[in-house]
Image (cartoon, rainbow, N blue to C red; front, side):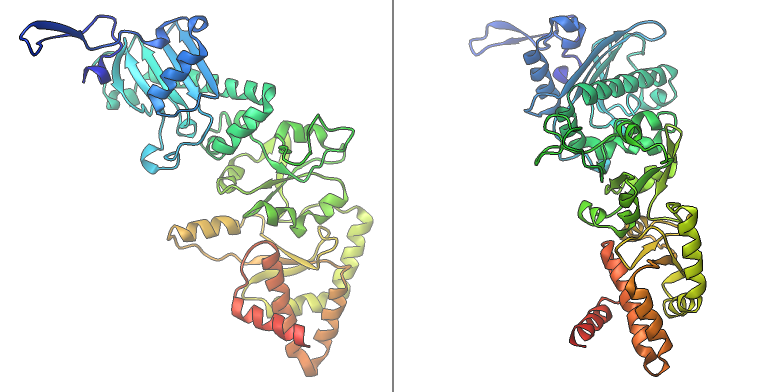
Length: 441
């Protein structure tokens, strides 16, 4: 009990007892040596590592240390550590809260005080020692304590400033941090509207950008090197004619890199950020722009990539094949809302996109896995007007004697578009049967 609650108070706590010979002995039970009360300049790296191990049972040294004393409306000392590796319980619901310990005048008050840091900084470990709070403070009174609100705001700023400095000065170290805790930090974009853009600056994203040999930093783009980018770096590279920040959400990086949604953007030299974390679906709902540039999902709605001449050509094609588009829509009416030509495809024959305000397919799958009932939104099937498959479909639709072949081709087209984005056809067995039939034709 003394070790837990009073180990660091400034007065010694002594236990008087008798030894085996009946002689009186005195033992000091508390260490009286709180590391955080000493000036930061006097604490060695080894001492920080030892206290961090005592606090977290993590045998690796912390990636960064934050140690400061605040005075004014609130007086307190904070000693915080940013870990190097992800703990096993990071996503344990019972630990989804601040992991910072609260002391008052060196007396231990509370483990994992929820009021000290927001939940999206739950990977930060450490202690806060307040000189102003009463010793009999309870969790209920802390929730409504204005001092705690001010402390949390200051601690949050300190952590974000430290991460920003780490990102700037030690990109390799920061990259390792992001691998471990980036998915948690991105929760802050969703939860904290006031700091959303500040947190977004810290994010690292996979990207379609490939540095040219003459432009790359030493080692950048080489095998094994981290080629992820920040939003600030993305904006700096944007061509003058590009007005939006393009992002693609996918289940994994392999499918994202091969997505047909990227074809026209790549052809125009526009970079696309590739998002594969489940949390990305949520923060994209909150952060709709960055540095005055709208964030545009390339797998949703219409992406304006054509000049006036290309738009006129596409409009003419839609008039020419109006009956074909309607026929495909009727065949796939159970699964698609409409069928249209698009300017976003270059090599692929077709792709699926979501209506502008629809629930994304990745989010629908997540909700279903949690046992929630989710209405199925029909998607939009977009066709490449210059692909030979369009002419072939038109010929099949015109052959009334073998119209069933047109219907099967429409099923294959939908199934292939789904497989390309990493999804499953509506009827996988039927899709496999049609593929086998096509191979034997």
